[in-house]
Image 1 (tube, helix red, strand yellow):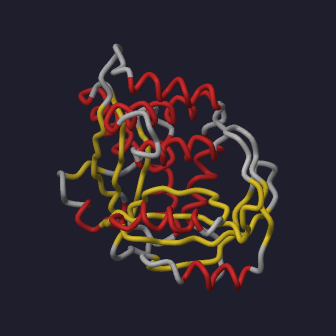
Image 2 (tube, helix red, strand yellow):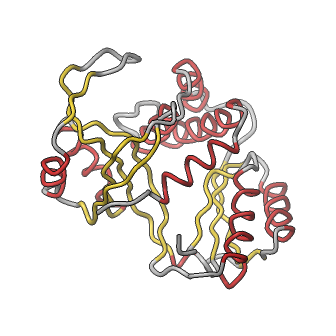
Length: 264
């Protein structure tokens, strides 16, 4: 139960490529506004919005930016209409790729995504030809620490570290946890932090997250991910090409997430 999280690596790499915080915050704000528009402005009643806000907080997005994004979405947004759309593609050696986007112009986005994929050596696939290999799962990263003092909104809560094995045993008792692994990540200062990653089925995700919070564990992050039922092993040359495709796609303003079935 040890190793480095491939999900954390993806997030760290994406953060490095988004050298300008403004570009990353624009994507996060778009995600928040869309979630608020679809399900309302109360994160306690809108789980998608709750996840979008939590993701923004992990990226250190200012609270004022978050509040404006929520208000914009809840107010109906008099500007351009944003919608969610996913595209599918193949990279070298038949590696499947799913590209999740948020866009106000699907014609522009599909043309630009197609060009990015093809210029990097891949090809766009028909709808459903790749996505059937993937399932949506909940991913919750938990620090082996428990809440000892809750602060008001916007302030840092106080947590106390607990024994890692004790934390593992307690978390494994949570109904709906399918798998757990021990991983290493980095904080904003580059310091190594130890985390426990919990995998849940999509339908159990909200309940498991609530149960973990009720046990007062420190939640590092929580999000929906797409995992492949089987992965494809490729050589170093193909791996570099696929990573280049993913990197180019993630730099696009309309692209929210990129998933592949390449073995890490």
